[in-house]
Image (cartoon, rainbow, N blue to C red):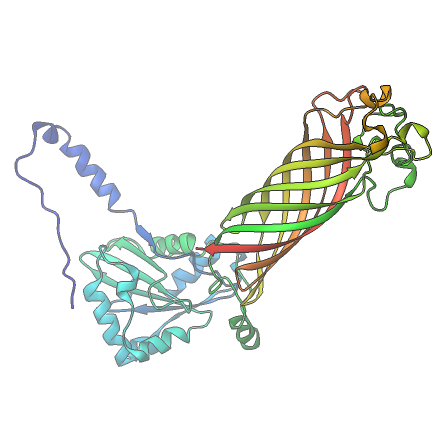
Length: 430
């Protein structure tokens, strides 16, 4: 069915102010009529190096192939040597000619691009066989020139532009070349490369970035000594032992008081937008024995002495997603975390000492601060299966400390590294 064009009419009851500015309005309309209207219906078309351009005109030809090729080279010097042809085989094709006639009759700026799709199977097959060539259709209607761009990525026009009928061919060519084909050119594919590309996610057919929410549980191991670093860096801290329940040689690191190497367990929840940026909230718990000298008689009254470390991490995550298989996604990521950490003490005397007065040193044993703040840098690799299930591997380094880095504050500068693995359930949507 033909969609009739429409005209806007001015009411006769105009205000006096309109007549005062009528010449200004008239001049503005004249200038505006010389500007093209380019409508973007889809992503920018691919610019091929040494590409081929077919110019298909319905009725009189309104842009020459020579002008268009010159404009392409002038506006994009990296485009190489494009070839521009008059699409005579399209014009001689009676079925395609019927589609061109239908397009010319029904073009209207109120229509959407999908409304202009061909319905005839022969025309559809011809559009799908364009490969890396661009088909530029043109027609005149209502004192305007319409230009429609078709390529292999879809049946509807990729781009549509409208110009005044009086506009020069060379100016139209430069405008289209600049706005549609000014991007970095890509190398054209051979038939073998094209066949391989069609079986892989690519710029045309790849899935849209998705949003994601996940829940996970995990376990890991943390330690003070970083891999591939000399033992001498940690000798004093790792060999430290508590004297009289509260004294060590250097109190700056918490690892002078408790064992640094220990497993931890975690639970976390997170979310991401567009497979690019996300947030994650994680809880970790680990247990650390106090560093006592068991040969020292002062500790004979102890049954055990350990500290539970509790941590809450809020992480900002940056990621990218690769899809090597339809049911597998690989997501490398990096994150930075703000961490809130505190210790709870678990200490108990032997029964023989429970009824006696507390030993002087036991009663005055050392205490950690109420909490510590942490900055952690992390790297990870998440592998998702069937979109909903994932294994997450990550590692990182954290500096646990206080706002006052002074020697007298216990644990004012405590650094450790970790590795961890987690099992996750994901909810993904576009």
